[in-house]
View (cartoon, rainbow, N blue to C red):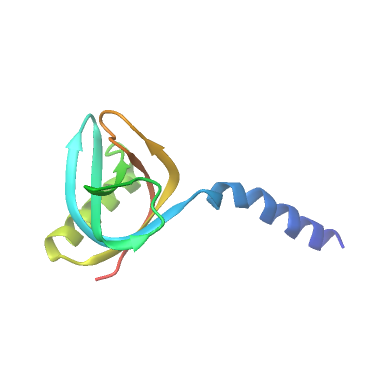
Length: 112
């Protein structure tokens, strides 16, 4: 009984972390460094991105974080190779400079 209660409580505690997450699959059309952040723009795809505009779906990364450096490299490779990627954001849109309606990129899958 305790094992099942633990499992139920664990799943309830995990759900808020991913409850508002958004995902998008498309092509990287732009990688921009501005205001100490890297902004990655994706277009020509589909998904449930929190931040969408006529200029594409935007995600940001912090180049001072080691894992973000790896993802930046993958994003540049995907852009140059014109390959499809799948990304997930944290579900929170940030307006204003330097983000301009971008959300924190949390997961990146290079489809090519």
